[in-house]
Image (cartoon, rainbow, N blue to C red; front, side, top):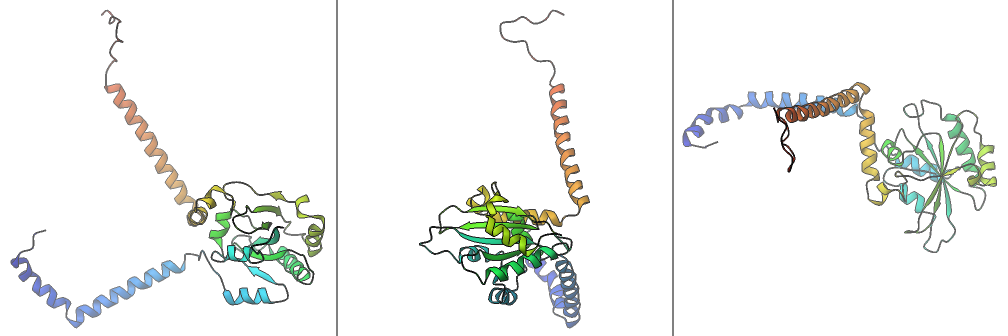
Length: 270
């Protein structure tokens, strides 16, 4: 756009009107309405990292001695009992749980059993370190680990950069008791758990080794926010675009006419 003195002169009345109190009051009213719509929209988006440091400190210093794992402290919590001279893996038991959103309100029995077990372990030496990961509060971390609720994750922690092995066991949400978890520790968790492997492994997985584990968690969490109809609409539009491209390519090949005869062969007689 070319700027001329004439355009500047024509713009003077607009600038003068914008400086008037009435215009500024109207602009502030529109701005307030827009901000209200934005805050209303933002309030409907669930937080991907809900962490209460006061409650976490109380849980750690209380009778149960349980750490609360979050998106910003999970490595710190898991490596806390490890020293540079540690040669025997330190066991850290992490209960993956949830509330009404991710566990549909069915994890109360497992939560109570785990907390009771943590209280027992806190009074005994050489027992696992206990922590809780709530997928209602930490959906990104749960997606980054591909961790289902109602599962026990056992981390065998060693000093960095030693490889970390993880064992997982699904817990019965209705029948698991503290006695079951205590017996599992006595018998050895490897008798009932399975070693974790795959791309979502928090330490040895390809995503984690390339720094893509948490970004992948955000992507999966965002997809989870989409309603089912929006996802199906996206798939439908994508498939139609693919089919349209194939049909255009076939029609282009048809319009190109017959292929020329190969070199060294005569063309067919008419």
